[in-house]
Image (cartoon, rainbow, N blue to C red; front, side, top):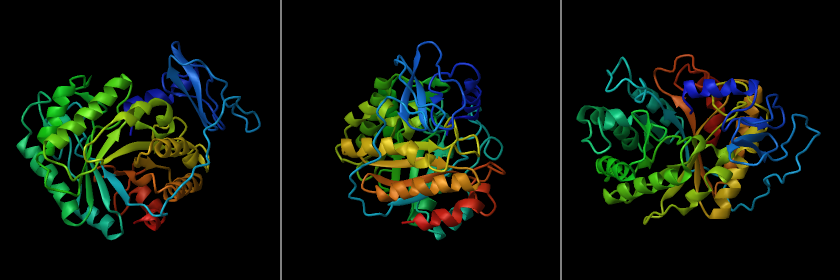
Length: 388
């Protein structure tokens, strides 16, 4: 998900003109319908228009349900050959990347690792995939091509092995937003080396999945393409040839903007043909995942249908690497609709992971940490009905 600092900035941006990449129209939206200089308001679907760089302002859907845009909406009609069953359902286990900016930091104070007992509880209930974020600055201190930290890797690997030894899938997630020590990664060769060094440690574990990087944002789109390709090249060069690779996109890897923002990622190549496009989607007004209020009861489907069409039209496969909603009936209906849509289109969607589990989330609005996390107590009985 977006960092809390970034999300907070986005949430206040609708008071005047909407800022870069913010919402500027749609049913139920009450903010500004104009964008800051250099950005235009672009229609994406009935519930969401977005300020995009250099775009001409299009006629956006108004906040009234009776005033419609003159633009053509993405079709919700798709031809599916789905089996009606997801391959994966799981949880993002967020904690080893905590303590942003404090490197290397102290285990138990600035960051920690997932709880094995919580993982076992979730696996016993049918969850079979866990995305485990880490900080690149802790994994490879100082430079992208530095040696991997022995201690951090050992503790991280213990979690990965616990998951995969129990039959689950473990996603290695450098949770860095396309940055390293706060700076946008532009050294594609160094990024390839980073991935070759790390992937070599897991090359023999076929239940490991490599996530290129979490939520690239506000970056040159060609650079995002090149970083993803460099990661794929590095992983395969390490001898990790049996594993899937999750490729993320720009604009926080949002599903709701994928078909207009990340179209060039269809060019990615993999000699093993195991690329899966990882998208994220939250259901609050700005899509930041910082509010327990969902826009509407059908916003889940509205925000991913364009991505579904993109996947099918381009012959690609996707996974919803992060999603969540507040503990209320409107969000529950929206989450149900979203998951039903993924199942109905399981020829192009492989699964979904809830954000987030982890022992330090306390009373976080989406916490999926057993036994008492807010999201877990409200949504567990629903989500388990979608387990593979």
